[in-house]
Length: 399
Image (cartoon, rainbow, N blue to C red):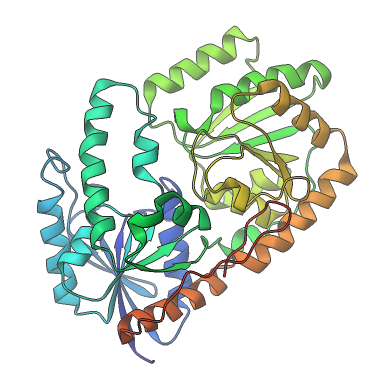
């Protein structure tokens, strides 16, 4: 099919050099992959306060900004924003709409009446259960209502990991689904460099769900055996109180000057951090398919992760890294010391990780698989199925 017009809906970065999380990274990389295909005319509908309203031409795509939602958006099930999204889609008149995240973006796309496929990025309701503050819990309850409605209405779903299908089970039994993993930018595959054996990297938002207190505690334990260890934390701190708590913990444990808070980095800076790191560590309490793990694998670095959510589908325990229980700093410290002190092991794991990333995460491969889904959705073919390739030794793979 040639001349296919696609409307992508969801978060999209205002500045490609400053990504505000994994969803923006995925939508940007997928847009870049799609823009390289002659048969695609790509339009991106953005609903965000970071963008002024209007239409903006960009390389390989046109951006249509409809503005974000300030107050009572979730209470109203996202209706004001959904109406603006649906109206923008109708003006574009696409063959297929691709909504990113099962939330108001998906509902706006479905409201438009056009053939729609929804990518489920994170398990929002599972993440919401980790909220502690009363106001956070209240917001989470309204978000859960929106997610439930989006899942009920979605007929075509892209899953970033087989774990998503396992999590939702019967809630997605009515929908056609395909497993297509996150795309990783060519930059990370092209990055080379010699790692520093005692350099440990975390990449992601500085939020409680990512297990940073556990990581800092493990780093202190590991430092007793390897005093030269250094911990680098790359990511935005969107929760000021949590960031202050991390600073206090670093000071209390005597780690000032050995733990570096880098803030949000450009893709180029982040690629350099991966290249210089001996390993990347992400011991989350809950995660679906974190882009940071895939980027580290693309650079050829071993990953230590927790065996929760979709992480075991990405990290093959003992081959591309290690899986360590969340909340066990002693076990995590042992694995950090093991990789830091065994260069042949680190190289072997890095080679395995890189080979897996090349096979599964290249933006061109992901774009090709996604276009195949668009064609099926546009044609109304009801023969779609979930496609899963089993990983090696607990790792993940899907096609």
